[in-house]
Length: 64
Image (cartoon, rainbow, N blue to C red; front, top):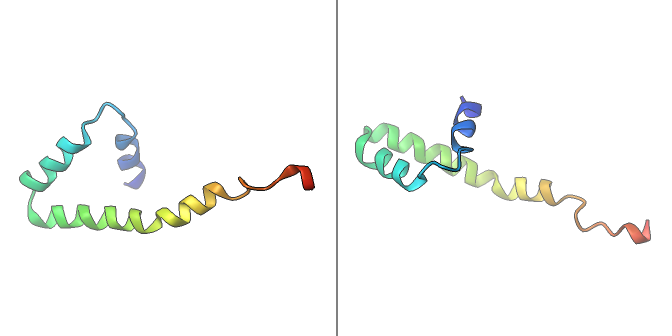
């Protein structure tokens, strides 16, 4: 399921604000809360992902 969501979100022609508006206004409250839960879990992982992506970026190859 997570792969399907990430595939859908990889389409840069999507209007994310419009999707957010729809989820907030037109879906049941439980679905809205579950959507927020998923986004908060992803946001919690962001520092870890940033650190992994930057690993080795500052290594100076001149001194190795």
